[in-house]
Amino acid sequence: MEGADPVNKKLAAALSGGAVLVLALTGCGSSDDDNEKLNSWADQVCGAVQPQAKKIQAANAAIQKETSDNSTPEEVQKTDSKAFQDMSDAYRAIGAAVTRAGAPDVENGEKKQTDAVKELNGISASYASLKKQVDGLDTDDQAKFADGLKDIAAELDKLSKSGNDALETLEEGEVGEAMARQPSCRTATGSAPATTG
Image 1 (cartoon, rainbow, N blue to C red):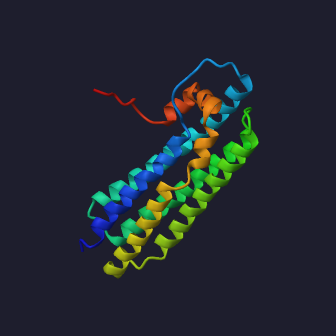
Image 2: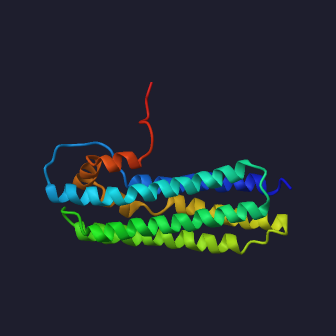
């Protein structure tokens, strides 16, 4: 019975890497640049990202919880399936928000916006595909189920390592500074700031 457990932990570890993607959208640092257009753009995007970031964190937490319990394959499948669906929806919604906001008022803004949206939609599609995979696993055969989870964990791992280059590019320089000035962006990154020392 414990065959799937280490795999679940692997899955949870790979997943927590996925949360990093959305946090890339919420840069820190600030400057008092007065680009109204850009501030307005950042405010719109941050406002839309925040509920989606929460959704992604909740999906991660659900998977983490399911992997720490002594869950049956059916429970794991159900939780993972819903979590992947939620993540897919959240990334699609962030992509739609960036599309609605239009190009940021910076050099190459249009290209940066297009690339970021394409990337977000790609991530969304990857999670949708993982949902299909997890839905198709055989929960009656523990060994097969564990093997299937291993493949999904490997995919997730790839997903968490790839793909936020365009988001990072979108947030370079002035855009990142404008986003850092938005209270909604700051809260999207989560709880207390890290302390050193």
